[in-house]
Length: 420
Image (tube, rainbow, N blue to C red; front, side, top):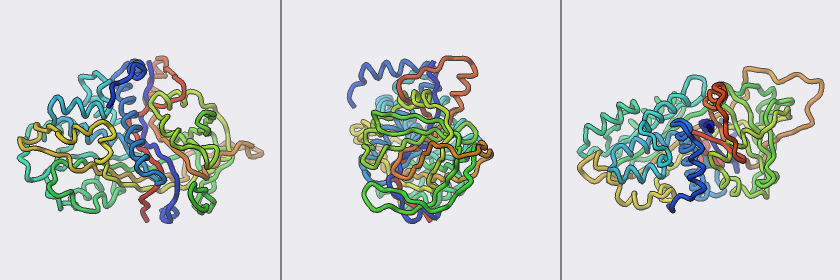
């Protein structure tokens, strides 16, 4: 059986702004064979949510080349899954294909997703999410749909006017422990129909602490002069490492508390093709990678990350195979009136502090190995819980070539929205 983990964050950092220092083609045979490797509802959901997140990330990264972006795909999956409950069988099939659910064959799909959401948001994981549908008050809403979503996901779709942004912002803030503020900067679109709202806050907690933090150091950017940013540093830091000669990068897995870890892909130099790395990301690709990394102690240097990013993802859905669906959403279970999806607003806030609950191993001399994230890099943060559970049950974990699985994911490439 192939084990699945849940990706909490994936990102690529291309540049830093000043605020950073302050705070449809047919499925191929190969793909069908890939899906066959996942044999339980949870592992299939993990792979599906991973690949949806990677596809969404690639679409956004190509649209905003040169900018920082990062996403929390599990929260986007959650709100679009709520929306699917209001569609016809044909509309649901189209949405499920974009969400990669068409590979699951899980009659309890909603229960599986609900359980996964509870797992990745458990106390100590550092993650809080918000996912809700806001529907225009001009629609005659069907109470059966509202009740069904509330029963399944413990959140009731809300009827609002386009100008009710304070109500939306207050709800998102409350759901994320007051960490995601100012979710909407402007009203919902005029003639609004269904508006998908998703947000996430993640604060990473290292297992091993950093003794040096906040010292300014140089970060090389690909298209400009180096910038000075605060860094975290520690000698003899325990990680797992590996090198991918094809992608021309060095990978480090850094353990975090409560079965969470950070994977950092550091290109060999500024001229390395980051797009090739981004295109390689699949559930199997990263899972196999996690099985091939080897323990090491390194002199580790990372930026002190305090990131915020927001985006209306609606224009990207066409790139995920939903162009036809957007023209005719068939959401008749929501209202007898035509319902159009008018926005998919998403916002993520992330912090990585130097604190940890363990000191690094003592050594008479610093290790000769060095890992400095001082140039554009891509990162993933994932929950390893289910991997440990499968291993504890002595079930074999399939390793492909170089890979990773996720059921919750935030994807980031650069930083276009810095908050003070």
